[in-house]
Image (cartoon, rainbow, N blue to C red; front, side, top):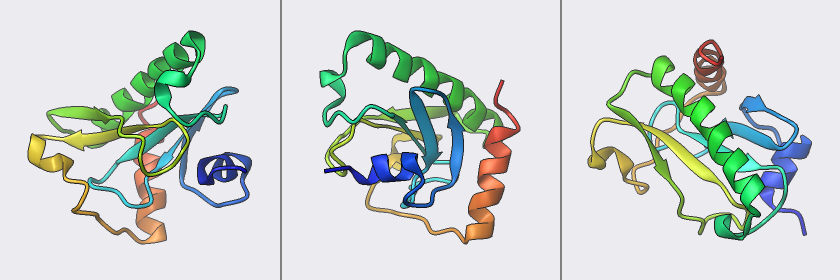
Length: 130
């Protein structure tokens, strides 16, 4: 059975795509904890991040780094935090969250943006992709 992330990657479920390669996909989190909160996933459907083969895991982190650099430029912050919890969706993924302190990483405090705001957020990040 396909995960929600696989359906997003295939276009069956709409998303606010930030970037895509042959093997990886980045899109805005639908329940962000910060403006610019982006999810980075491998297109290969694997539940647990450390079940990915070494090549895919390495590629995922390198792709995430590229996205994180753009997120930090788009939304200036102390750092872009990397969170790998893996409980929400059974598909390996990395949360990239613009943050200035640990307090910014409260997954219980979700933000809400209009579709227009989400499109604007994507544009800010994409403008900083190299």
